[in-house]
Length: 195
Image (tube, rainbow, N blue to C red):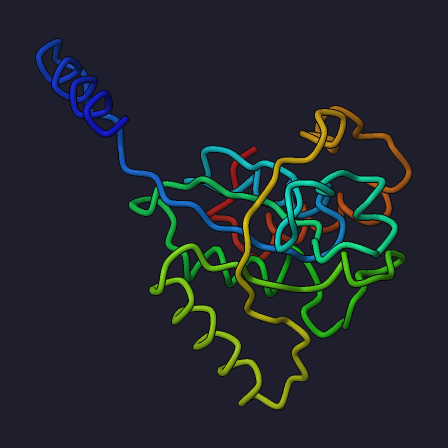
C-alpha cells in the first residue's frame, strides 16, 4: 500500500497536481454515535467520520449486541482529519466542550449504559499523551471527568447508522439531542465550522 501511495503522489506531481495531504485518525466515544458523527462532520479539516464500535471484539461488533450492554464496546466515531488544518488537540477541545458531556458516567442524555461511555481511544502515543494532559487540565479545574483513556480496535457500524443525522434531519432524536450540538459547534468554534 505504501508503494502505491508513493506512486500516486509521484504521478500527481508529474501531472502538476498537488500530492495528497497526510491524514491522521482519531477514535472518540461519547454517547450515541449519531450526534458525535454530526458534530465532527461539520469541523473544517475533517475528511471523514465513521460511526462504529470501539474497545470490543469483531465477533459481536453490531448494534444489537452492543445495545445489550454485554460487550465491551463503546459507540464511537473514527475521524479522519488533516493535521495541517485541524490539530488533535482542537478535536479534543471540541469533543470535550461540544460533542458530549464528559462528566456523565456510562451515559449521555437519555442513553444509559456502558456502551455510551465517554472514552478516548488514542491511535498513537502522542494522542495518548495529549488526551491525558487535556483530562488533567479539566480535573485541575475541579471538574469531575468520567472520560477514560482506552485501547482497542474500531469496527464500523452498520450502513443504516452512517451519516444518520444528515440523512434523517427531522428524526426526533436528532432534533432534540444532536442539532443543538451542531449549533453549539458553530457558535463556539466559528472558525472551525463548515456547513
